[in-house]
Length: 328
Ligand code: 13P
Image 1: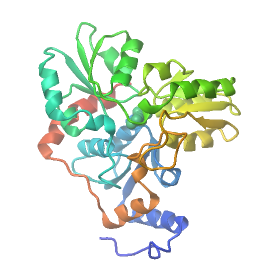
Image 2 (image 1 turned 180 degrees about the horizontal axis):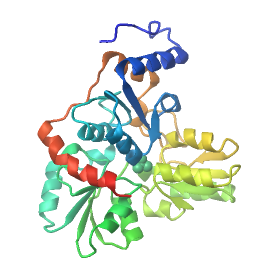
Image 3 (image 1 turned 90 degrees about the horizontal axis):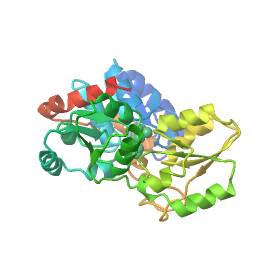
């Protein structure tokens, strides 16, 4: 239990109070704060490490901290726990889920696998621990092509749960894949018509697209890649250029730091807004946005919510994750 209450009552605490309280709690707890690029900028700014799914899993695998505080969504914290069964893993809000993960219940996936005997099972890390436990390999959007290329060509492959990422991997690698029909509620909602209009208004712009988007959106891209690969494209690109960003807008926080003179335009959504309400021109992940600086403070202060997983499930889900970390 933390002895000190390092901030004023939360009603009167300023963001600066929260930032210094979080730093103090981090020292006292010997904690590592990990944040995905889709987190709110205020949360990214207090993290020890900000990254894409693969980079965060690698950091979780390598840490000597006592506690991992995950600023992301449930499957990411689960991955950290599977890699660190003896450590405490905290997640700011246990309800921070993922539409892709929800689209693939383990019992249905088990039947799907049984219908395709002899197939190697490759699952996107955006899936539950129970689905990972049924898999031969996990992948992220950073290394999905490298993992599929590492599987002998004569082996047939199931790819789940994202049909659009799977379609992209299939085209990039030239391998036919048996696809599960899941999709991400953020990436499937970009508007092709409105993106074409935006590109016409900014003819010198570069369009950066996450591979979870459907083919008609990917076909409009200058660069298709994971969040870290899109950020790298900005780092390597015109420092004063215009970029159309076709993924969750949280990534723009780091893009603006990488290229302060550049201009970033969020690609328009097909339908306005999310359950968070007011955003009519962007695709914001309602799960990622559950996390706030205040929740980070209380999560560390209370050491809760804590993510726990059955030891037997951890043992079964670990190998495909270790293979994912090793490749690409
Ligand atoms: P990254 O592999 O780019 O981190 O993608 C994460 C994600 O969940 C996209 O929706």
